[in-house]
Image (cartoon, rainbow, N blue to C red; front, side):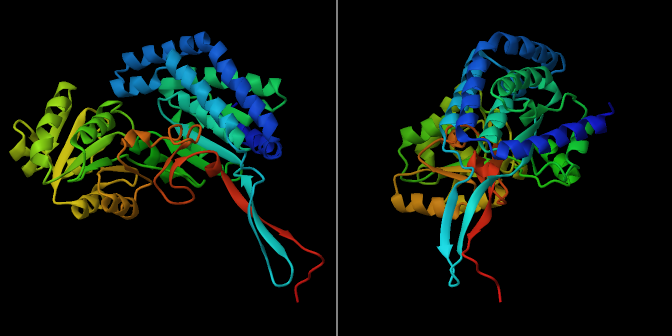
Length: 418
């Protein structure tokens, strides 16, 4: 079968199956999710075997260490994948929920009911755990899903999908509820994003180049985020020890992910005492600091930050540091250079905390916590399908509810329009 026909066949089957899934009971979906979780655990050896082949290929092609980290299916990652599916199963089922009702003067009762989106296409790089997270969230929300992972993870992704499809069949759910594009050709992506008749939304997850490519080619609506330029602002009233731990975690715990801190903003009054111990701790972890003139005056051996550094998503152990006059300048910096992803303030000042929450226009804003919590699993969504930095139709980490839309429902008693 030609590639174009193969992708079209997958999309048609997904559309047909989506009607079945839209009416699947919550208990049936939850049973399947629980079964998938257990199947991932019992299939761990098989999954790691497939993943080892992907890792070997990644090392041979010189894939960066951050990407290899995302690619690796360790026992702990597989346990996390299973835990995510179990947590998704415990979430309330949004499908069929009536959010509100109101009465019209003519006696009509009008309401809004949540329904699935239909067919969701996921295009992603490196991370095979996205395969199970996306499949679980889509199933819970009553959607069929078409998965197109990156070439570096093709064996891992297909092995995971095989496990999930097996459970679907065992539970009386069509295997076409969860499908993967079985080729690494970029042409498959181009074909997939043209199928507006069969696919309702495309969600790309990966680097900026991938996302811009999908947006430029797609006839299907795209939910996207291009970059994760995340900031931590250390206010004058911040507890220095807390601020240091939050900043360190935000940058060092996992630097190659989109919710890692890329720029640290420090209040001028706190900077002389705060920056030297921070620099010592960060340098011991191998972090390269790039600073503004005031930062470089306080710290020796810091590379000068360029204009490009303020907007950079390093995904590496590199940190831009800027000393600011206060909250207003910090917010202005974030608005100018940020990517609407995630920002945090460390402060003991309630007013400043509330202002930061209101005035920073990013999709996740935290007070006294690491940016690394901008994650669907960490925020109680069970998992996330992605993080949207565009405001239609969702903003921030997307969970089950974000994979639904709503329709109007109307109860009458014989009314006609005159």
